[in-house]
Length: 448
Image (cartoon, rainbow, N blue to C red; front, side):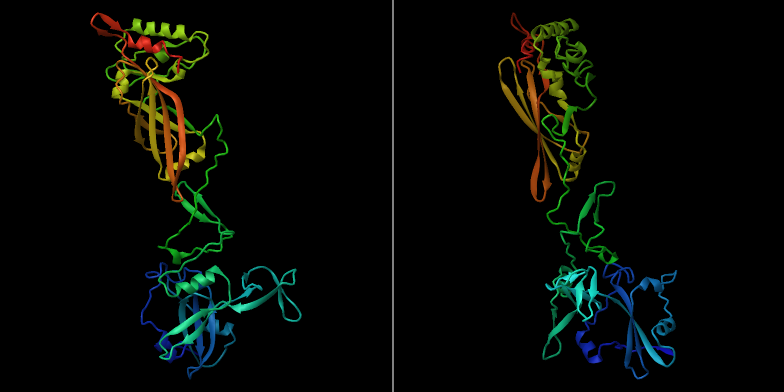
């Protein structure tokens, strides 16, 4: 017959030693350790069997605590079945159950090689009792995966523990954690591969063969990856493809943007032949010109372009001086290599510098603005602070995209020559002189 014990200090440890090592504190697993008992791979139930005089007869370890939990979440253990399974069929016994979690070490033993490193492969036991790696003559030996008492103070109130000669990072880190409030598991670089899934939940996943086993005791802890980053696949980069497409954003091309109902940003000349489409170039630029005067600009452009094989203003998007002043240039960045979209997760900074040149007088002007990069399809507006009423400007742009990686800022410079052009006023009178700034500027349309 089995009786449940009701003794305050009844354990395999003597009452005297128990008083020495007991902290007097209680820890509620699940509240203080991050997971309730039974959900950690290091939880187990210890069943101790005593005779009626209190002498310990046996200690049985139950490694699957969840097998003894009913549908209501309560522990339900039949000690008689466990005792008969272990050879106790009759007699009077006293039993106790301890619900334990291994913090460091284990009651199990391990095999170590000649360098005291843990061996987990196949092995053979020879006739003379020696243990060797299977298929070799490399000797192995069995050793307890524990720590030992190195010294006990004279007052018997301090115990100094030491490690056995086991060379294993987990073994050492568990030992170090005995004096800390946390347990640290260290990865092995050759087996602990981590993959990053950026969508939809930004999850890190350990490889199947990882030496680190995740369980519920780690809930609330920190997962720290040192010197690690997601490597982008940029094999498709080339002189023809820098990974980015810079185009017009906003409402698109040949569309009203600026002040009044006739201010457009046009596509520009995209045909290297002698043909120039007026709807793509000089249509309603809001430069104080009439339809007839716009056709005059088209005539000039066609004349200077003839047989050059060049595009007018190198195919730049075209706008008038008022639109430039009020609206600026609406841009859009598309990523032509999908992995570049990952930059949006790396605290990116985008600085856009525009450099303009008046093709008539060769005056130069530039400005810088900060923009936001949100990955593929990023949109923004580049301000154009220069007043182009009396002179035009053909603008190139540098998009400096940087991001944080391993404590270092890295990035790309996306250069687009002749991205957009600003046409000055068509007709400005000074006294009796009629200054046709737009005509002067367009006549230089292939000198870029």
